[in-house]
Image 1 (cartoon, rainbow, N blue to C red):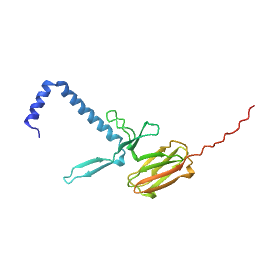
Image 2 (cartoon, rainbow, N blue to C red):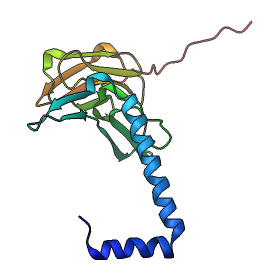
Image 3 (cartoon, rainbow, N blue to C red):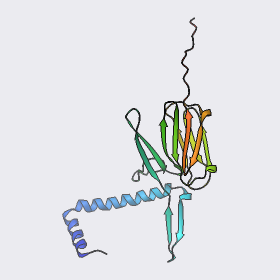
Image 4 (cartoon, rainbow, N blue to C red):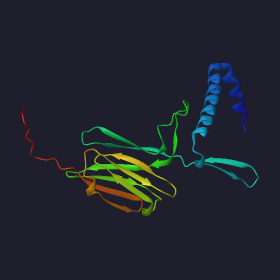
Length: 193
């Protein structure tokens, strides 16, 4: 419901600022188009319809999660890590949004003097539903069933020995510790032809 002031101001705005009124109409069109593009890119299992008491139907989307953490690294430079189920920062107007079925968990990588710890937040996941794998340069975290589903490949700051991996999972927090790969102190002799 509009007030007399809103009506008076609306008329004056059109007379005094015709460009602003046109800009507002253009923004409304752009937002309507952006939401139409957004609905097309959301996976079908994240869209639900439900009936209200009055008989009307409502479409709901989600959960759609996007976030990031910022930490200052040992070199003094900021390290930004994203999490959620949006593939890139939302670009609603350009239509560049990609929503995935799995979320990326919030992860922190902590390098010690002789090991690397990967700490991941996986709320709502049972320990039996998790699958971990590692190679010298990365750790892969996946939840196989249940909601929400998570998946993330974590790049490690230095090569590790994957056979030394140990992990714990408690209260939705996964911690994986891997020993750094030992560098041989002695060199190898090279024959000169």
